[in-house]
Image (cartoon, helix red, strand yellow):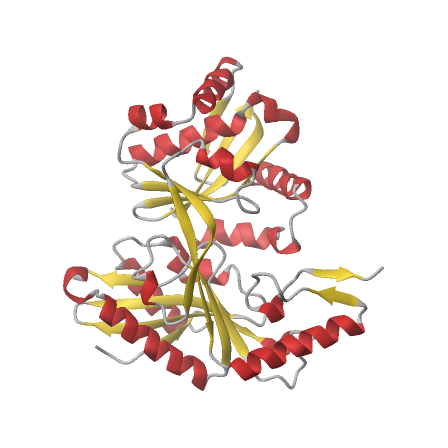
Length: 368
């Protein structure tokens, strides 16, 4: 087993090596691609990948390194940094052709021990990972591993007739209704209706009072189109050639991921999203995909979660996250600095919820 090494996506030779290793992943997980990780880097952040060579393969952990001195509440004299996985899913992935011989829980634990040592040497305070259901040996992570809600995964291997019968009755009824009203689904691998997608997506975010980070800018979607060809596809439900429901789906070798989307509020009673989801499932089966990850709700088991569950009643899995504090003293100091900063602004901040790391909690309230 080799020593732990770090790749920086901003350095062209290292970016090329990262892409090469990614291309040898059996699953070619989109969340591990450097161009995907870079999508979620702010100007001061860096897309990195820790990797360790094994006999016949490589373990890889892509992540975002976030410097804390750029935060107003921390100040330029702060020297700490923290780590987060990119939006969606993350965790450890395997690259190579001999997983049976070298991919083991013991090797994964060794990887995390080496990564912990690197993190402490680089003034990393904390690490937060949203684990992919397909991440390698999640329970071998060196920090706390715990569930954070539930997600829905629609297995595609049974085939369309069995999947159709597995849908809740209301889903089948709503798809028939949508078909009778003349709705149709357009598959758009070339992002030809991107402007229509964005209009509906932003309106949906407005309707649900989404946080600012979910209003992705123009360059975000342009980067997906330019840098991740073949790894994304848009599905649109059309009424008289007008988009009324839409979804951006991410593609790996084996899996599809519901990523971003929305529905025109005036078209909700036409059930355009049910017919769209059925089209994604059909496309996935035709292209040999194993599963379609639908994600969870906005908050816990809300109406969105139950809607997704209606498409895969037996596909409920725990959404696992990893939390690691490398420097407890620095962590508490950062919490105190954030609290002092918010008090000075007349705000309150709640450190008692499950947000991690607590010092980055965005749930502040203006005092009356």
